[in-house]
Each structure stands twice: as structure tokens, then as C-alpha cells.
Image 1: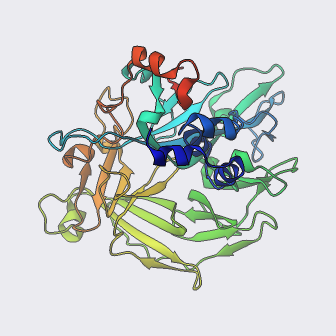
Image 2: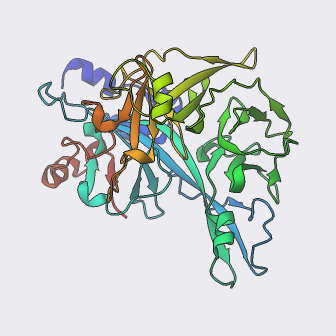
Image 3: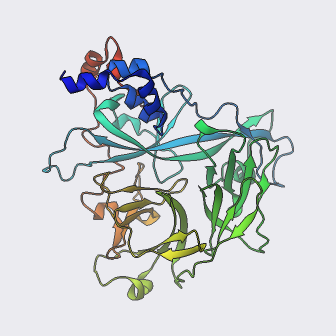
Length: 428
């Protein structure tokens, strides 16, 4: 150990504690403790946040449902998921151009401490993924960044009632998206939850409420497609392009200036809201057919059947500005969570692009993260499935070759004091 290492190891406990308080996530604190034995002994282990949060029972149902069985009783548990980006600390040879430099995965941690793997852009879990991964990972061998949080509601049955029929399932499982005013580590009196549920309706629950507050925008026909929490307010995006904000304290609803959406006569539309480094974006995704492509695609022969338009909110004017490009940003539009990264920080992510889901990319018997994901490049308007973009196609699956462990080496290096290593169990 050189003299500089000794100096770092001898930092005072008060200074280390002050630094630890500035770290954003539990993973950051764990990796901070893992630097050396003195840092580990100076910083207490951060409390483990169980999922679902045990004392937080949300009312059921969100809105009245005439199809519910009269004996149906229960509540919702709030479930939390975390999207991580994993990178090796050792440099990957440039000759391995097909090897993923970044692996992005969404996980749910069960009560037993084991990890359930999920697609970052798909809200339903997959089966039998864990057999492709090592049972134990030494995360000190990797750079692990927490990218985003996702949430869901799990219905818990109370008492005796018949099995749920299809119409009842809509109230228990057909919840499209859930967002919260803070993560589960910072629950307080102002904690609130917004749910996008059956029929594109909105419900808000606040700490202490005995029932959900149904948000009514006084329109005859409204159908919301995405929601997000941004700078103290909930935002909801309607299929027509209308965006409203909802103050969780007062439930006051405010309309933002609408965007004049492109209207494709033959194409479908999907719309997303997304937070990115303090900015709020909306993504309009249009699925086109051959007649649309003749008019709207770029001159490149590589153009695919999707057009994506990105807008950024001008918060002072409460208006949307269409983006010609995203510079180094990479946007990921998903079912239950959308997020962004900077390409310079995560090698293997294609800059100035939007990653999106499209069922037309999936093939029969595919059942793995990213199986139906494509890329739209704002620079030239090209789009297509991940496989169309060599070097950027494996950030979700399969697990990169460098993601492996040597149990014998792990045992040697982690005894007798675990050497500050953070170990995660993978499996159901």
C-alpha cells in the first residue's frame, strides 16, 4: 500500500460520515464502505428497505367497479423495482466489438433478499432468466449505477371470496403505471402515489387517505397513456397529446399548452413522459405502414416503420419545444418506467437516440429482456430492432461474458472480514 492509499484510509470518521450522507443511493453507500476496512468500520450499514414496504397498505379498489364480488376485500402493497446499469471495471478489449460494455437490468428484491430479474422496459417478469447468470456477484468488480426506480401495486386478498373473474382482474392487475412523490427511503407526511389504471383513468393516494382520489379533468372523453412525478407535481399525458399537472397536496389540475401532434392516417400512436437530468420530455411514437413511409421517412433506405418525435417542456412558458436532437442523451421509453442516461457515461448506449418497445420486433418463443426493443436515431431518422445496430444491441440480453464470478476466488477474497465486498444473490 503506497503513502497516498494510507492517507485515504486515515480519513476521520466525522468526515467520512459527512461524505456518506451526500451519497444518493444505498448502493453508493455500500460501495463507499467497500473501499477499505477503516471506511467500512466508520460508516454504518445502510438500512435495508424491504420490498414491498410492509406498513404501507393502499386502499382497494382505486375506483368503483360494479363487477367486483360483494365479498371481495383486500388492499394494495406498493412494490419497488430498481433499474441498474452495470459495467466492468477492467477494460474490455477493443477487438471484442460485439461484447456489451454496459448491461442494463431492472430488479425486484424479494423479502428473502434474493433478486428477481425484469426487463427494464417491460412491466411483467420473465421466467428462467437466472439460470444464465452466476449465483453470486462480487459487485466491487463492477461499476454499478442506480438509474431509476419503478413501482407497481400488488393486490392482497383478505377473507374468503371466489376466484377473480376477468372483469375483477381489471381492478387488480390492469394497472398500467404507478409513480410516487419520493422513493421508499424518504416516505413522510407528504408522500403520495399516482396510479394510471383501467380505461386510462387517474387516481391519487396521499399518506393518511382512506381511499383513492379520482382525478376528473371534466372532459367527456379522456384516456391517459403515461404519468410521471416531476418537481413536486404529478404529470399525466393524454392520448390526444394533452398534458396536465396535478398538485398532490391540493389535487389542483392544470392544463399545459397542447402539442400539435402529427396525425398519420394509417399509423398507431404511443406516448410517453420522461424525466431527464432535471428536464421533462414527452415522446410521441408513431407506427407507420408503407403509405406513411412514402411521405414521412427519411431518404435513407435503412428507415424503419417507426417515427419518434421528442419534445421538452419549457417550464416558464408551460409549452413544449420540439427537439431536433438530444446531443449525448439516450432516452428509454418503457411500460412502467422511462429513464435516460448520458452515452459518454455508459459505453454501448447509442447517443441521440430513443430506445422503445415495438411488438413487431419480437419473434416466437422469445422470452428475455429487450426481446421487442428498437432504436430510433434522431440524427438521421433511422429506426429498427436492436439487432440492426451492431455494438448497441446487447445492453439488455444476453448477459455479457464479463458478468461472471469465480466462487473459489470470491471465497478467498471475502474471508475473514468480507474485505468490504458487496455480494448479491441472484435467483428466485
